[in-house]
Length: 170
Image 1 (cartoon, one colour):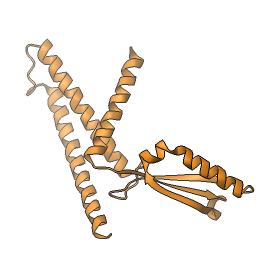
Image 2 (tube, rainbow, N blue to C red):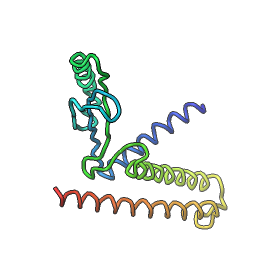
Image 3 (cartoon, rainbow, N blue to C red):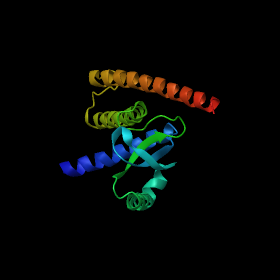
Image 4 (cartoon, helix red, strand yellow):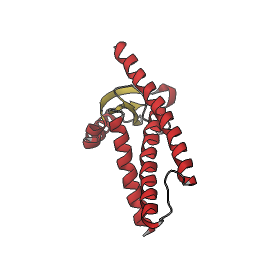
């Protein structure tokens, strides 16, 4: 049962992440550079800039282009580099980026709210003395959750300011 629960938790968290991205209006794009050489002496041969879902459906196009360019440059290593970003804000979507952390924080808030509601429902059904306004654990949890929501809201506001700034400079 443990593996099943962890798998369903994983899928639920993936749904929470997708919901957070939708709420933040993130446009997932990827810039793919095909290069040869190494280090500071690399040469970019070709660049794609496209929606991530298009790339994920058409990965074979990139593999084909790399193979073709490798044949044209047999003495060099031909490789690809990927840069995942939000088209709307221009911000990176790499794992440690601020925007990825914001998406993750929003998903964690959704998960925490779901768990809190399950806790309340369970205690209302099984504990006749339960009062969700005086339960110490619940009160502390709600305070912590509210702080996290405020932090998230501030980050969202900064993101929207960044988007506006980007729009005005184009």
